[in-house]
Image 1 (cartoon, rainbow, N blue to C red):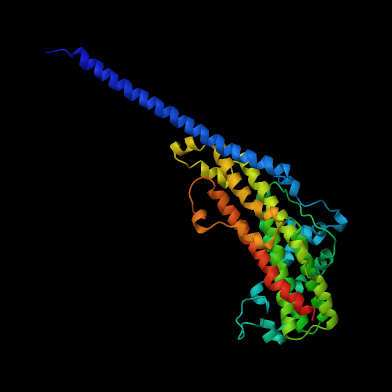
Image 2 (cartoon, rainbow, N blue to C red):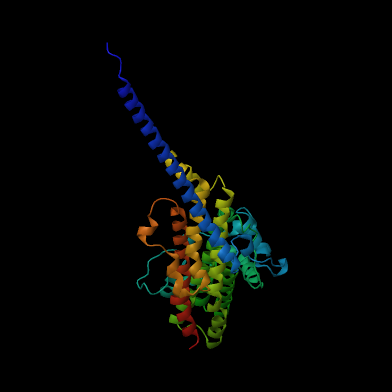
Length: 384
């Protein structure tokens, strides 16, 4: 058998050497590309933070926490409100749990013949029954009206751990409380007690203001719910011509100031931003973002290590918020908070940030709409 010729052996060796060198160079190029992309994204975020920190922005959540309020002036520290907030088994919570909205005329979803009217507008004789059904919470509602008159509010929550706010049904209890106050206000009005109705409505607007002052998105939405339901009752009284001139002036004074809305929205966004940044900076293993990133394929995880993905997510969210914040919360710029459907569904790093920013944009839009389409026309109507 003939042995391989030296030329053939040399050619094979050169071929293998060429392949090896090609793979080596390709590997080095990939490593360079990976490191270059990581550095680019991390440096872009660092540059963004440095630029806006120099302009006065603070990216920590704690900086934007609502200020402390002395207990004597604190709506949230009133015994009735504190008990409602703290536990679903407290006495105020138990009293509230006795109310079934389906059983109270005006609180349920019963159909009316005229969609422009409420149930009690069509059936004013049901007002007495509604007040009777609400009797178990009458003492609680009196305490809530007293609490609403306090000058400030600071609920006991960690501004850097907003995810801890939701357990224990707190928001469900606040929602039921707003329903009860609105039902009592409308039933009192239809039963001929304009003064009692106005007291409930004033309390609802004050509570709305207290909740908005907390700078937390869900609490601000709860505050808007109090205001929205109060507006519905006032409009019912306007349609039925039940408000005296003096009460109209009183209700007009109770409406929230439009000048407060933009600063409140900016504070809400900054607090949300601080929590978003904190999640990525601390790599909280229980966060949805970290859980999602752990499911990446191995090759993608190599190109997108946690520090790169974190930098991209933070930059996408914060750079999206900044135009609205820089405008001072100008309602004309609320569109800058939302992504197009194509951008929203774009895969890869930044997808979580795009969804979060879009959600915040929707909330901001809802709060601006409440001012533009409901509060502004109501001010004009009550001022007549």
